[in-house]
Length: 252
Figure 1 (cartoon, one colour):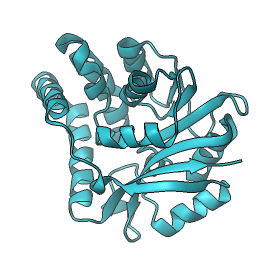
Figure 2 (spheres, rainbow, N blue to C red; figure 1 turned 180 degrees about the vertical axis):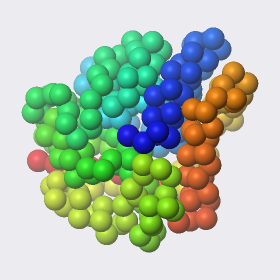
Figure 3 (cartoon, one colour; figure 1 turned 90 degrees about the vertical axis):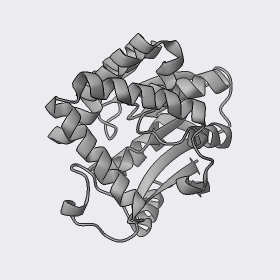
Figure 4 (spheres, rainbow, N blue to C red; figure 1 turned 135 degrees about the vertical axis):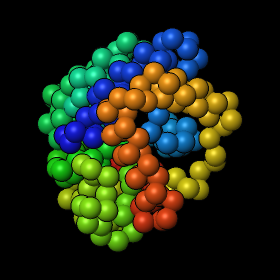
């Protein structure tokens, strides 16, 4: 993983958990969802995947664990988290107490068909082995293979210089090829731009976390690198060169 991505998903992840603990429990989930997009996308996925009480949900590339906690709060699922960065795993365990394993999304340390459902949010574009990620999600979920993705697609091929460091945005065409190779079927999808806006109460908590992070760590290199990544992503989304999509998938 690149230095910039390690800063964002390792160092800043632990800082985020520290800030959330200081601010209070009502900040945990919004803080843990920083970078995961609109909570409406999580609502949409929870409904589309038909998650039920007690079912196991694998969050692959879970970061600080906010989306998994959101799903637990909505449907009383049992989350299991995987992330390649140790800092993210420690942050998730400290905030939510979920099992969090450090591992690559393309080499999951689980047996076949052990989870009721799985999702991977904003992770595909960060993976050199995108086919491996999708194959592993298919392998570890039992039929009918309820899978959720948040993906960022390039409207046209982007050069490495035009993408945030460590990202590899698929196009619509290459995404379809990846899904076909993994034998995954799209049941429904939506553009993230078409989802409801972030609620003001949620946004205010995210803003408070951002303010505290900047106040405490704005002078540090890891924060600078993380902010550069975020700003570049914002520019690509703002000018329409990259678009966000939420997908509900099935297999088997």
